[in-house]
Length: 347
Image (cartoon, rainbow, N blue to C red; front, side):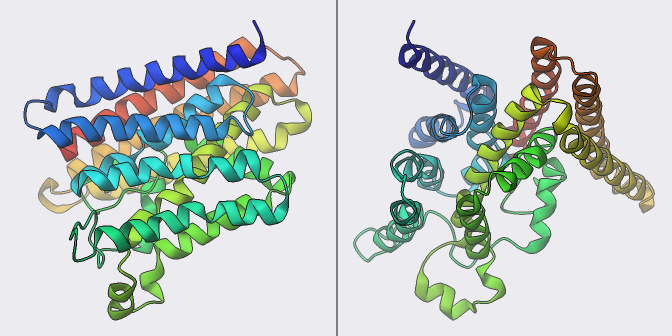
């Protein structure tokens, strides 16, 4: 089988996995959803996941890394949380990875890559300009509602933030381990353009910090939807990091160890916050405390998995099937349970 045919097979397989997961998550709520919600919410999640999968193939050779990139974006806290707004907000977020494809695959020269990388930014701006016009009067997401810096805690404890904030930035728990290595690999490869997109997306997301309400109203763009751009980048980097963990050699040991340390620190932070909330008067914080405990469990599993990969690499053993099984088992449990919790809370 040729490489192109094999890529098509992997693409179809990824689409089947995403479609099956979408049906599993939303099927209990099909009866209470309107027609457009029933149609667009699962379809939006699948479209965003598949777009991120295709985008990540530009840098990720293995199927597992690309599959993870799609899962943590299309079925991540952010895209799922957009169901609180209009269904078109989900579709707009789902289109962002597809809009990056021209820059990723055809922008070989710096000038062309820069211009093509602006396409998602332009489309988001045009979408709000056109949909908010007198002719359509469609507001996919509130203009004045903007993420706060405190919302970034969603990267550490996304499940706790479900009931505390409108937007949910983050990639769940275990993927943070892969993300740490993915960021390191991009810096080592001097992919500064990718980093510039990441910084630019976050700057627009938190633009309320340097723009007043009148300026936001004049722009007419919800800062919430800008968050889709950096999250696409971070999802792809998580896929890159997973592939790096699967193929890491002894020379990469310090980066693998750094990933394990980050996960270990986050588990300690989550347990500390759980202890704090368990001490709340009359047990009013017990619900949050239990969620922090669950987060800590996931981070402990991610730490153990990274530590095992570090030991295998340090001993100069390949054992790629064992690495794949260890990492994908932890990631699958985390994404499966976390996505189900987010959908149940939102719907």
